[in-house]
Structure formats: C-alpha cells, structure tokens
Figure 1: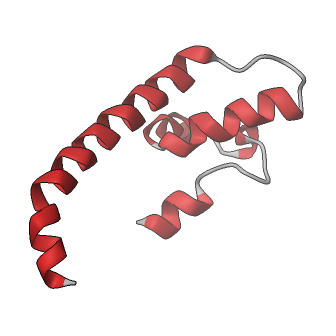
Figure 2 (figure 1 turned 180 degrees about the vertical axis):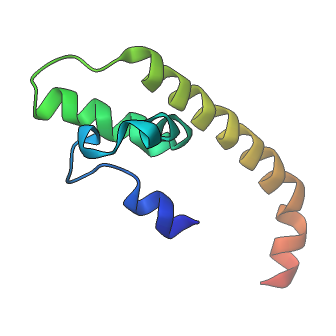
Length: 82
C-alpha cells in the first residue's frame, strides 16, 4: 500500500498526466495536497489552495495530539522496558 501511495503522489510529474478516471483518487492521498501546494508555489508561482492545506494541517494536529495522549499513557511502561 505504501509503495502504491508513493508512486501515486505526483512529486516529479504533474497530476494532469494521470488519466481522468483515476484522478479523483488523488484526494485520498494526504501527501498530494502538500506536493500540489509546493508545485503551485515553486513551479507556477501561484498561491496554494489553502483549503486543502488547512485540512491536512488540522489532521496532522489531531493525530499529533492523539499520539501525545498515547505516549503519556504508555511512558511509564516504556521506561521499564528500557
């Protein structure tokens, strides 16, 4: 699955070369939004679409908070394992 997501993230190619019938699947790849924002700024000299970047940022903050809760809950056990 990771290999598929890696090659389905348009880093060195533009998303326009992906056939139209598969292009709608790109929205399920969170890295697509980040890479597309970089393409807009660096290649096309335009501001990125802030809506998609905000969604990915909010998801990252939510997952970071969840990871911090899990870490604090499990840290006493981790110290014993070290």
